[in-house]
Image (cartoon, rainbow, N blue to C red; front, side, top):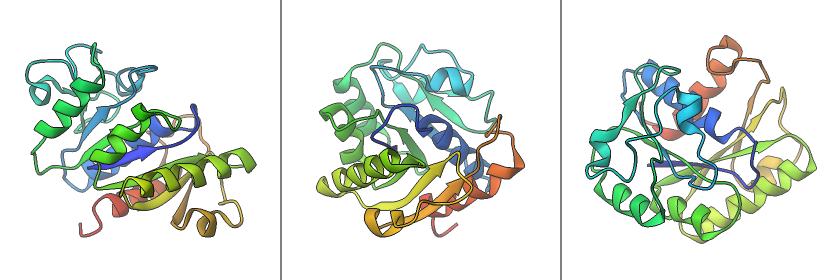
Length: 202
């Protein structure tokens, strides 16, 4: 399970989670992207799936929907779930396929919960001082709960801010800013690199 996390809303976590899933589809995998943000769930909107049924369904895995934005990737939306539903759903996921967790922003217990469940984490940040600070804080939060940080994705950036890799103690991947990142060839290489961190042996 790979968490896609970040300290700031609007940094591109959901798009990054879906882009990473699309790169895994290119490798003939069938990833599952799980909505973990119940305060501002938008994964279903970006993925082109209904919000219900979702994590609160009796069998959450069976409630997943194939994304119309990323064909070949399944999405488990929020439905009317809460943190307890998420914990139960994540515990029940024993599928060997890749699972990508679209995490909420911030440093609350809601943001920490999916990080605890994940095997590793990709931090999403924006270019600039605040984005770097948020990335460093999120990386520290992930490590505090025992989740290794595999990479920092810097969205809408041609280059990575100087010193970010050292400050976050993780590799950095710039994701170019384009109007349709899930369809653009400019972003495909960045998402493929992130997929290397999700499944380094594929």
